[in-house]
Amino acid sequence: MKNKKRFLDLCVILVILFTLSCRDASNASTDKSSSLESPSSSSFNSIVKYLSGKVSLAQNSKFEEVPLSYTIRRRTRLHKRALKAFIKMAKAAKKENINLYVYSGTRNFWVQKSIWEAKFSGRRRVNNQNLAQKIKNRKERALKILEYSSMPGTSRHHWGSDLDISFSKKNQSGMLVNNTYKPEGRGYKVYQWMVKNAFHYGFCQPYRSHPSERNQGYSLGYYEERWHWSYKPLALSNMKIYRKLLHYLRPKGFNGDDVAASLYENFVFNVHQNCL
Image 1: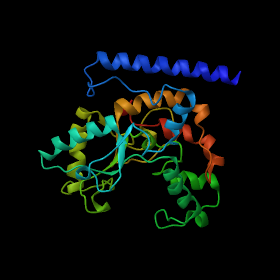
Image 2: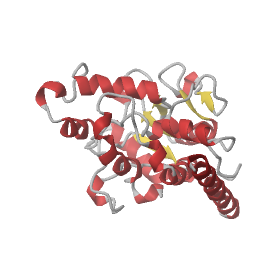
Image 3: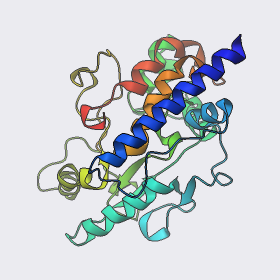
């Protein structure tokens, strides 16, 4: 019975992918080179592994290293289609004296786990605080981390469609980390360029405005991240499949996963309407 349900779920996924592909081909979208792509149509398990980030980026042909001229870190990877679109956008920005670099690209489950557990255990401070000491309630501690960091298995960075953007190759100070840039600041200028132009290349800002203002029916969500941009054609198809497979994608296998069941749906799906 369980295998039969998996088979039926896979059939539905393939129908979703086919529908998305037809719609994408018929519309004058920003990504005209190919139809929307399946994470993997070869098996149910490979789809689940892809969406939850349980893949080897170096051994998976979907992901490609970002050329050093477009990133501040070696061996940064993105999904091939997202990378192609980003390079096209970065070249256009350069003509207007705007520099765009990938600060952080694809992160698999185990990288996200190391980030999450360091914060959950207090080894890595959050707002200069040891959360394990300050917040004893595990759900409240998880919610504090979830203001800006994903639970392993739920991050859009797993898909290769999402990236954090920097306007400097030198250090983190160039990352668009400040949500209150002054109008005269360089970061503000770069962000305004992205708001005005990114959609032409298929990119959107998934965590724009306060989570309660996104009107998606969820009470929780990540806080605004002006540095985080998503390649919409790929990310949107992944979101649709993720929703269908929600039961199978419940995050587990890390410190704090006991509170995941009541939280993860909010953080996966509460994105700005421009990314839907």
